[in-house]
Amino acid sequence: MFIPITARKLLRNYKDFGPGVALSKLVTGVGSFLYESRTYRIYRIRLDRLEPRKPATSGLQLRMLKPEEEDLICQIEGMEEWLLGKVARKLGSGSICLVALDGGLVAGFNLVSFGEVYMPLVHKTRRFRDNEAWSEQISVNRNYRKRGLASSLRLTIFSVLRARGINRFYGGTLPGNKANLRLCRNVGLEVIADIKYRKCLHSRNWKTTRIDRSSEKPS
Image (cartoon, rainbow, N blue to C red; front, side, top):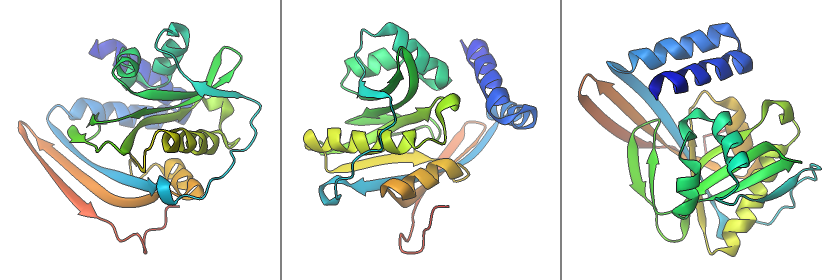
């Protein structure tokens, strides 16, 4: 399973970022068997204090994904390799996924989970309270980027979650993901902490550092 997933990820990185970034990511991935060091930036929004905002009209259909929609699930897993074989199972166990559709094509999605979640980038599991939700993944098809679709997905999922009684919404991203941090700023999410993960051979450790939100300005 590892080789096909790695090949698909390498191809996607090549298409999205070019050969240099794709090769760098591949070398980092291979080296992670021995040594790995990563910072994961956590963000949050208080939905019970959020002033409702109407999402921009994108001309796309935004609706919740159903577990039996295999073609759409296949498209989502093709956009994010780490989700391969997992989306239907997550939906069956209570996760929800908002999709933006252009006919039968997935233009973007936001997968959200509840309760106990696993953060693969830092190999950490956390249990969220009943009134909390975790954003597993938000992605936009490269042909639909820079149209405000990611903001529309976020604002729509906020409304969905508030209707379910969810008061706090969390997610995470790498500090170098400037696009995601800009999205955070645009929709009112605040960066609250960094999880620093380090692995050397069989030794692992984690350190969580709170961030002073008054000085944090995502760019």
